[in-house]
Amino acid sequence: MNLVNDTKFLTDGWPPYEEGHVIPNDITCRMVYVILKMTRSKNILEIGFNYGHSAYVFLNTDTSLKYHSIDICQYEHTLVNANKLIDIYPDRFEFTHMSSHDIDPSKVSHYDMIFIDGDHSIDGMSRDLNLCQQSRPKYILFDDYVGRLSMDEKIDSPNPKRLVQHFLSKPDFPYEIAREFVYPATDRMNHMVLLKREDI
Image (cartoon, rainbow, N blue to C red; front, side, top):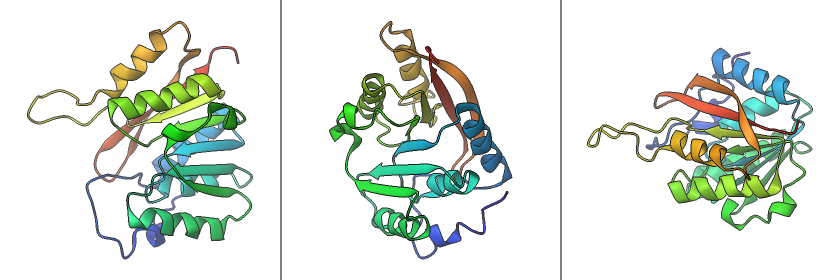
């Protein structure tokens, strides 16, 4: 399955900007298929919608999947594209304009998986991992696992992988790494990591 041409409606008419997004080609579609097969997720909460490419790939990979995206909508295209996906998948896609930092953990405890791809600051990623720690989904999918290289400092800044490893070392964070994925994005080869709750 290659959705590259199918997703042009998500970017047409919008100016390019610095943040990259997933390229919905055969590699990415296969990765999403493997993730859904491994986790058997039937309802997913996505933190960070952006253009909507990830949501579109997930919804096309499993035609029974329920998908809920939240985003602060700092870009005009985010809400426009969210409404497009609501029109295409009225019974399977939901969108909420809000910050994940304002989510009550008890309200999202029913999701099989939480996909973290929102605020990429250390504080923002920590808050989203704390949300998962409290709501305890079966799986956490963490995007941008390997940070962008800072040309000035020659180190990853911020360092998402180190942050995730810190959480995994905490005795009250009940997750372990299930698998790491590498996939093409518009700005680089990107990494995401799938975390599995230890009791499942």
